[in-house]
Amino acid sequence: MNKYGNYKTEIDGIVFDSKHEANRYIELKYLERAGLISHLERQKVYTLIGPQKDKAGKVIERPCKYIADFVYKDHDGKTVVEDAKSPATRTDVYKIKRKLMLSIYGIRIQEV
Image (cartoon, rainbow, N blue to C red; front, top):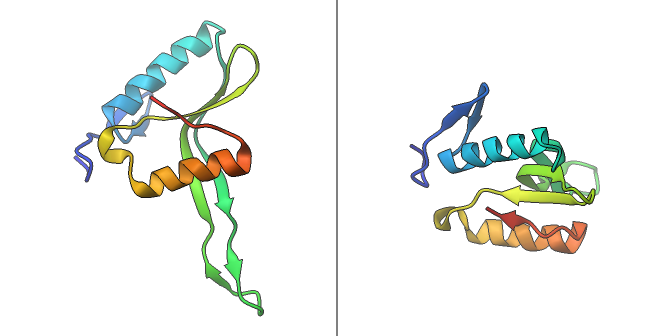
């Protein structure tokens, strides 16, 4: 069990952070096999703020990234970004990253 009370769950040799995320993966795999979605990806990384460097080029702040639970194309070819969320995982940091995703990439994260 982790700090949010979730249990790691393994499906298809993949370890998910929660049962909820693992179940959503199963649903999305069915949708992909049925041809309703395509290009399903897991743990896709989006850079929200690049690394900050001093005048000498030394990194003084690491990049700020958002890691999407799932990314796929819907039946219209639109990119969908999903995050398996519970009330406990809707942290202030996550909310800021969600807003940055919309501002920078024009992507509204779908919470499932």
